[in-house]
Length: 256
Length: 322
Image 1 (cartoon, chains in turn purple, cyan):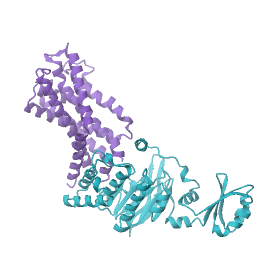
Image 2 (image 1 turned 135 degrees about the vertical axis):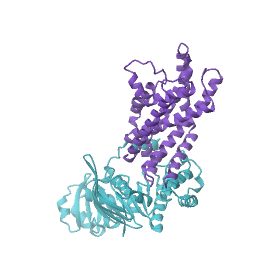
Image 3 (image 1 turned 30 degrees about the vertical axis):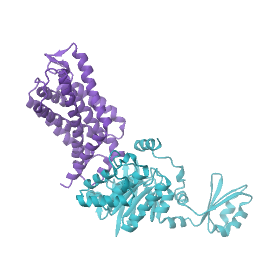
Image 4 (image 1 turned 90 degrees about the vertical axis):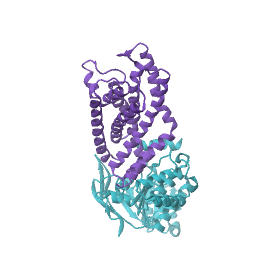
């Protein structure tokens, strides 16, 4: 139990750094706004999905996009962090690798959740401006949405940490983007409904754990979904549990 | 009783032997240097002793704890300062130390007391609330040294402690290291490829080349072991064999178009040597340095070695030269 303070230290550091690096925060929210306004507005001008305004339809998808990019890159960053940054100091401390992993997951999840909170505020603003017809943003739905996002994020941070723990140099950054983040994002149904897909595509979409996060968020925030909420939540939880177990193992065997 | 004892310590990667059957013993409160060119296996040795790399074979005991079976105990009783920065530059110096206190599970009061103490030791008290980003390279190294001392380790591992520092900062860092080792009896192991650092700082040192210890001893005995002074002569029609016949000449060889001699008591035997050398164009006499020791035992000049090529080093180099 002596690692509790250490876990707190890891969390404290991530949160401090996040709050101090204003440019990172700005960069992380500009992207979702562009997606929302340009893709949402552009496609939405001619398309609506079973009666739902397209901009409203992709709002949950944009949240998940932020989760994916922010949390996975947070994890992959340890390829630097363990060589020329603070993680090296953590790895020589008496803390167990499992505790270090937990601290990292908590820190990364907090980072992502803070960005999501900003996107809630922006969503609220858009809603007030009439850009999000049919969205349901209230304390109850936002709480439910945050729980889904938190569980998802713990899993995706773990995926990033696993990738980062195996990489020897930052050259692999792009690969993680192309082969992990983008496929997970595009397959998740963030931009399209997943209930009437061509047969070759459907299996990939259903294998993507994030599909169920998007579906769960739609159920909560818009009131439409393909699967039942219990189904969504079970899949996400199972994914995250598996990712955490795999991540703990990856950290135990990680080279400095 | 030795603070550190390594027996047959080896590390192999695929087909490369980074450290080859290394044996060493370090006494309590001693500053022990691992001296060698880049890629010689110094850092690998240090990281094995610090439990960050698992040895392929052999054992090492640090403060009575085996590095393979009791890594947690070794870590609690050891401090380490890396060659590359490992502090967070967005946080302040004070915050970095506080994180260290938490990582080592120190009680709050004790932590605050130690932070004050180590900040004073490295003269950073006034800058403690500045972000590390605003520190110079020397200040950052001092902060990390202070951090390594915060939990009162019995052993301190320092990987190239003054690399990239200006001469003034180097002197200060050396001063702190000596003070901690000799006053507080903290056993210190440093790796370095600077001959002057090894000479000035270390009580004893081991010269490492290609993963093996080629020789070890105090800087003084190593230099004495060469058997005399170094003379470089440039002369026309010089005959090496004539010089080798002289009783005072221990070793003679060609170096960069000149002749290098190791000579017993050079000042007394100079006339005899000059006579044997023929028409002399220039002559240089000096006492041996660790460079000569390295050259003597490895047959190579350490200054010719190319720098390390890892990506992290390249990035750091880019950052520091910006």
